Image (cartoon, rainbow, N blue to C red):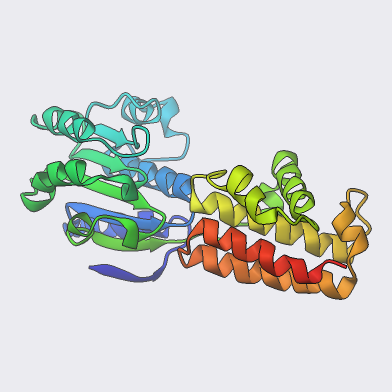
Length: 283
């Protein structure tokens, strides 16, 4: 089942909490998101609201032992699974299954959260299918992924799917280190006949998460737009030398690149497309 439309911050919590109170909570959910950390924190808030013995509030962990155990990752009935290296491993799933062979004591459910759920291999996915095919009433699984289509179909088909997309304010998330990376990249490819080689030797695999590439190019977009509208003192040579008309065309190109990133295009091919099309705007 797919929940239609995007969900703003906290709406996923409210929707799943509503289903819980109506006793319509499924045994497994797949949350597709453009911000895995924010989505994970919302899932943690949901777990607190379901299980907190008091009336949950944001600073609850100061007074509530259960919420404090959740915050410190010490609640026995809550397991978070992250990829071990390149993939989520079979041993991680077996360890979780063994731990959840007993009933939860402090909470209503044994809950497992799988982050980067597109990183299963066939072995770990097949091992997990027992939980998904023969669900127990007291076990709840939550999978978080940047793109649901990259999640193994046998897992995806057994989950209720929600789109959890958030507005990203680049001005708020902008930091000096990221901006430096953007300027270094623009300088490195500027009038460089080896720009494609630079992509392969320096940029391929630079970020692991698609959202990181999205923020990278959004930062570039913000920087170029700001260079066009204001007299920044940190303008790189490329900005100083290209015409304002071509600067606008670069901005349009970056907006197009962001669409490719959001549509799950191959990052290496997107980077090559970017440097090839940037060449026409150099003077």
